[in-house]
Each structure stands twice: as C-alpha cells, then as structure tokens.
Amino acid sequence: MTTLHYTFHFNPTARMKKRVLSGLIGFILCQSSFALEALSDESLSSTTGEGVAFVPQDASFVFQGEKAASTDLNNRAQDTGYIHLIPVGPLTSTVQDTNKDGVVNGSDHSVGKADLFVYGLALSKSDGNQNSRIAANTASAIKSWGTATNPWILKVETENQVPNFDTAKVCATADKSCQVPYLTLEAPLYNTTIPTLDTEGADAYKLKLGLWADAFVLDPSKKEGDASLYNLGEKTGVSDATRANRMRLQMIWNDFSINGSRLQIFQTLNGAKNENGMSAFYNNTLGIAGLVRLNSGDAANLRYTNMNGKALRLSTKEINDNSGMLTTPAVNANTLAPSFDANDGVFIHNLNANLVLGSLYQPLILGSDGKNFSLELTRIPNKAEIYKKIYTDYDNPNSKEYLGSTCNVYKCGNNGLAGYQGNNATHSSITIGSTVYDAAKNTLSAYKGNGSTNDAIGVSFGALNPISPGAGAALPAAGKNLGSAVIDGVLIQHLKITTKGL
Image (tube, rainbow, N blue to C red; front, side, top):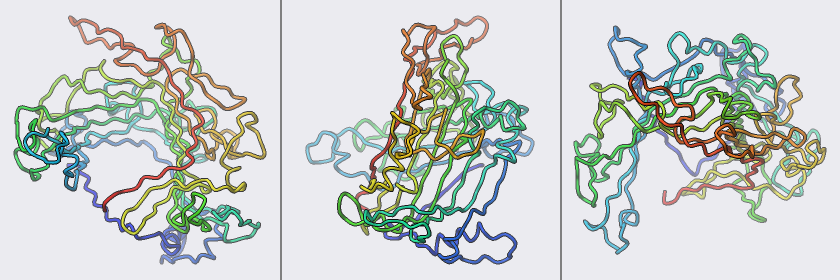
C-alpha cells in the first residue's frame, strides 16, 4: 500500500545558521571528493554556480493500493494508495460553544474536525479527458520533461550587491556582506515558442494531474479506530450512524505546465531594526523565494467555438458509491475507487497562475517570538536600492529606474536567454479563460464580450460541451458559463501568518 506518513518536529526558537546552509551547499558542490566537507562563509561568497542538471524521461506515476502481484496494474479502480492528513489537538470551548451561552452541553450543535484522505494521486501526459485522472498506460509517459539545453537544475549560485535591510547601508561592488549564496531548484525555462516534438520537451506543456479526496467529519471525543469515530451526531455528545459525514472530491487538471517555476533557499542579510515597520527577525534567518508557474497556455483568442479542453475540474457527483458514506477505499480493501459523473463539477478553463512568493530582496522567512512562530513575507524597506528592483512602471515597462515587472504566461521578466522567458519578475498574475494581452505594457485583461454561447469562456458549472452518457440516455444540458477573469499585477507588500498558543 502506497501510504505516506510524515512527522514534523519544529523548534520555533531555532534559526538557520550559516553553518547549516554551508553544509547543505557543500553536499551539492562536492564533485570528485569522497568525503563531504562543510564550506566556510568565505568559500560561499566566491561561489559561481555549481550544480546538477537532469531531465526526467518516460515519466509518470500513480498511487495504487496494496495488491497481489497478479493484479492488473492498469486497473484504475485500484488506485487507492493514499496520504492521510490527521487533525491534532483539542477543540477549544469557544469553538464548541455554538449557542454562545458560556457552557458546552447537549444544547450546542456538534463541532467536528476534518480527517482527510488524498488517494489515487497521479501525474502523466495529458489525454484531454476531463473524467480520467491519468492517461491510459500506453499514453501516460511524459517523454521528455525538459531537454539537454533546458533541463531541471539543482544548483548553488551567489547574488552580489544585494542590499540589506539597513536603509543607510550602501553596498560596494566587492562587499561580501551584500553577497547572498543560495540553493535553488529550477524547472525547465518556459519556451517563448511552445515546442511541438516530445524530444524537444513538448510533453512538459501537456501535463495531467488527478486525485481523489475523502474528507470526514470526525467526533473529537472518540479515539482513532473507534467504530463511532465518524458518527458525529447533530448535537454535542451524540452519535448518529445515519448521518452522511463525508465529502468526496475528484480533481483533474488537463494540459498545463510548471515550466519556469523555481525555489531558492538562503540565509537573509541583516540590518533590520524594530522600527519603521521593520523587524529584527528579518536578520540572518531562513529565507525562501519562490516562483510558482502553473500555465495552461495562450488564451488570447479562446472562445466557446474553439474550446481547447484545457481545464481544471473539481467534481463531487459520484455515480457508483461502493464504500458507503462513512468509509473510504483508501483504507478499505473491500471497496473500489469511485467514479464520477462526466459532466458534473466546476470547470476552470485555461487557468494561468504565475505567483511570485518573495525574492532575494524581499524574502519569505520563518520567525519566532520564542513561543510561537510566523511565516512572513518581509516588508519592503524605504530603500531605493531595494524598492526600485521590486516596483514597476506600467507606463514604461522598459524603465531603467524601476526594474520590477509582472510574471504572466506571455512574459516573466528577462533572463537574457534567447528563446526562453525569464523568471525574475516581482508581480503575480492569475487569469481564467478568454483574455486580452497588451504586449506593449505586459498587462492582461478579461475579454469583454457580450456573454453569448459563442463568446468568452472561463469558469463554468458543468461541462460546456456535455459528454454523451451513452445509448438510450438523455444528453445533459450544457453547463452555466460565468465568463473569464483576470487578477493582474499583484504585489504583496507585506504578509504575516502567526501561530497562537503554542
């Protein structure tokens, strides 16, 4: 059985020291030596970019359940390998006191927790089918995810002249206190012209992701394994085996790419003080910068009459419940995986999400007050050397003064490599369905048509082109089309999420 169990232990008072980062980078940099050696800070400051390149070929995967060797591996009903997310910790009396009379008793409505099973997780080459999580065995392989000239890369590099948080600090050219060594994982760069041959990495733009999920409302007064664990009644302290305390979901995304995504890990610089909205927690701690690019492709001319089948689908209408409402095929070997109505659900057509999560100049950090910890996207200091690298001038996208820009499916900064988009933009963009692109300003807007059935598409409830249910059955009505949407040029000035009560 493909079961993943993870246990995380986190000390909120701990910070990532240079020695830890040095040891990690030292492992990556070792080439011909047989022993690992931690690098000094001086060694890191002169790092120029060693790393490893790799290209996955003929790749796909699916979580299947435990089975005999003779069982058909291509039987999708047996895709029941799972990840189990278990809630921990007690519910507070404030949450359980639903009628707000100051006491928790049988007059309150019951409050449960979410016990979640994610199973049948699959990644393959897209087959265009919005009701299958993985392509058929002969067509599932991603032939080449990248190429020799545009591979996945795990590497170490050093960025010079990165200003720290001290507004009075000026970085000289060779100032080692302004050098940031970082470990990065990069997906293949996004091609400005999408390749058509699998040997050139075309399959990386036609991915398919699918999964099932069962979420149960569990009774917090019961222990795991109790026969009444999921029989939470309507009122506090009451069990009810007849209640349907489960929600089942199928998610399928056809024809998308993650090319252009990257993750950087580094130690932040110093100089921040507890003034002017800044925090000393920003100094010399774990820093993360990420660019998440999930793109379905060009949608500038997308209309109802030329739908391309690139859609993220979320559906809940099951057509063969073999397990009952209080169990899941993920752990019940006597039941098969579910099937869903092919036309049901929310369809998000041509989703392009390009999300910038921090940078070397505005990192995402882990901080702590000694008791609780926080995940924070740092404030942008009032320092021209930093904010001019982040902000953008929409009237002059080629400005030499303000160097920030928006990452979208058409352009994502400039890395100087002919034939590939960059990955150094500072603003995010999310588009759904039919869009209009202004190349001169690198901005996107939703297509403003008249809403007829032959016009823009975007989010729909139900399939816009219903799939025939078979001979003798009535064809379902077309889905409700809500049109397209654009969220463009998003810049997060500051974001902080903090735990309470640890």
